[in-house]
Length: 357
Image (tube, rainbow, N blue to C red; front, side, top):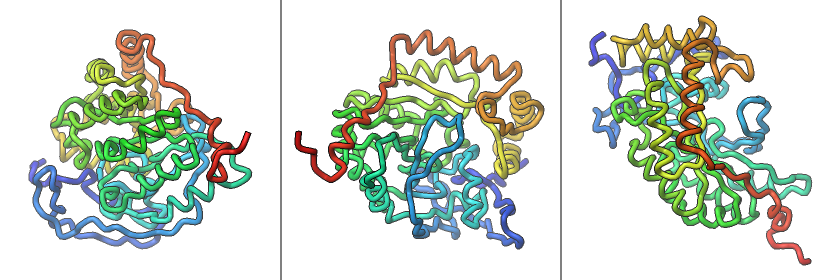
């Protein structure tokens, strides 16, 4: 396929039909929005920031294989445009497409700090780590303007409440002052996503994210300031970045990461057709090979929804990836441990001041 047909500066190349809507609507794709960092062409369909007003902000996570009990998302939709993102499907619940709508229509929860404070100061709430970005990145480009994440971190600090963060944006370093204070009481842990060491690959998979060098610098800066970092080498996509796993692990370890995690890509829901459409445009020479290798990891399909298996994969290719990860941990992360966060201080600060002893 002619590479000129690839819509640069965005991840998804189409808006698939929202399965919850009876009627199909179309969005013109004549041009792409101007992408400052990538120097792409301008676009008439600029990113929209849409205020929404949820009644709550902290979500209980019921999935047993996710590794978190509670999450919160100041934004829905994500301008980073990662083509593989599992959160794309959630945009359909808001009435939008999981494709380009997910990247162009960003829902803004300005009341998030107030809702968070209401939740964690409630008399029945007992401190459990709340993870920011359980669904979409809390440091995506919208955070430059709205600063909701920073305000929420201020609430966590005020009440000495543990918080986890997942991001692939170097913007997190803007909040190093708050993070350092949280880190002093072992109240914060950060997960930095690093999917590839190749800028060419990064630009295709994650068109509006921070560069690889900026992410590595972020890991080092946080680590140097006593803030524990876990590197998320995810997702591993056979035929695209699977060969990088050992080098990725070595590199993040060299920059101070205390641990790393990974998942094998699964293309659930609308992501299957979005990813398939994208790879045939972005990597036409290896599209079929990659798709077949993904299928090999999921019993002949591109997605497996079974808990405990869906993110691990099965088969020979998946086994090879897990073997590499095991070796990487033995070689580069021996005697390193990501610390548990402090859940004891919050009760003393719940009313806004320490209890008298």
